Length: 379
Image 1: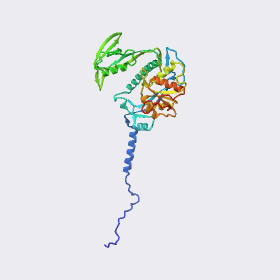
Image 2 (image 1 turned 90 degrees about the horizontal axis):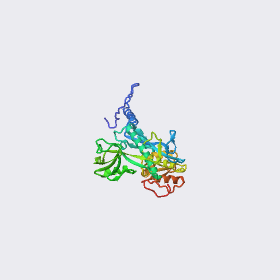
Image 3 (image 1 turned 120 degrees about the vertical axis):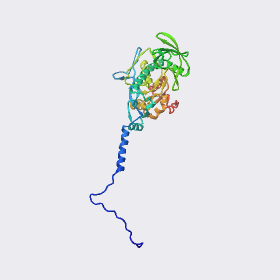
Image 4 (image 1 turned 90 degrees about the vertical axis):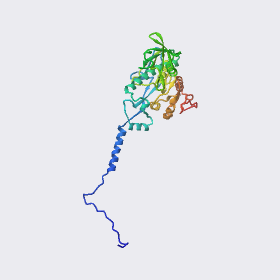
């Protein structure tokens, strides 16, 4: 064959009418199925996280479910005005409640919500009932401590006793201590009538090889010696404690359904407002948060981001932030709408509210991103 002769090229045969062959769209079909599977997992797959969201806001100077939220009796009280808001955090998930992957992703996008591992707050065997009971106990304790802090701020004397609340089975204290025992002293340190008795007791147990207790049981004094056990790197004798207060005034709280310890500072402010002439807020709208101890020291809380968002949404113009929550509060606060003041003590909180009521914010203790006091004037 000549090199210039045309070469034969195969020509595909046209399919006959009605017999056209189609390649099954297997790849597309498989991809579509996987997409639906992933979507279903995102919607239906539980994840071990909890979501913190802004919760309800309560005016401690106002009413709740038709009754005064805080009612003081047994002493002269005064009319007040304005608002002192306690703030809450709504929690989605946790023991007995599922959070799904899509919810967690949405919360990460939403700047007002926080995603946290459930195990950071609750052991795996915690039940919903355990959570409710703990929240109720913490709320009750925060009320007593708030009254104690308010009495201290107003220089009103009160008595307090440290009691054994429960004895752990098979612990060093079993057989030696009983529920209701009044702890008078530990290793020579007085506990009775000391607002910081619980802290003194805990610190002493941690640092001692032997714990010498003087207790009052049914009106009789007894001396007891207990050797602490080492429990997960900490010393313990196996008791829980509670403080029994006797105040010169009666304070009733109407906060059913609300739990946790973080309302203590706002409760204390409201009590002080009712027991002193004039409106502490000057008729203005104040909100804040902070756990408090009987000496008036304010401690940090969880959910600060959600609380400042809720305070702003409800119209508060001053937010009282515990020092250790300053960075989180500043990252979430719209400071064009709300002024943020740092508080380390109840006295700081009272002073900040009084100054704000007078229209002067130049000397308010300011938050900084590291939680330290910022001495610069203004926000």
